[in-house]
Amino acid sequence: MTEPTASSYCITGSDYLTTRQSLPAIAAHLVNVVGELRDSGEFPRRASVIIEVGDEPILNIRLEGLSPANDPDRIDTLSALHTLLEVISHANLIDISGESPALFNPRILAVDPAGIPYAGVIGAGIGEIHLVSGPQ
Image (cartoon, rainbow, N blue to C red; front, top):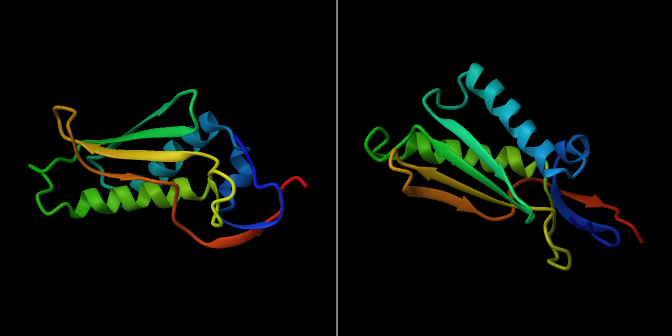
């Protein structure tokens, strides 16, 4: 995984510092945060999150338990997708100039009981922009 090569403006959050750029650590952190959000009523109870970490800088996240049948207006689905993107963005590092690739790309798919995707978010992240200094 790469970092910006000089000071640049990036979308990132404090979780970037605590997860140390490790996709397995980021995945574990996401599971913990989702559990906390679920316990506080801020994440749908019937939704579960499955995370796969491969060799590529892609974090595959599957949202299960919601479907067009039990969430026809997609309010819970879209809320859960937005929450996952926001939480995962706090651990990412995205140079807004485009000169350096994002630390990783999340692929978040909501799937129905048959495993067929019906909603999703694919992209780097969302959040506040900060000046980050990388190796010179």
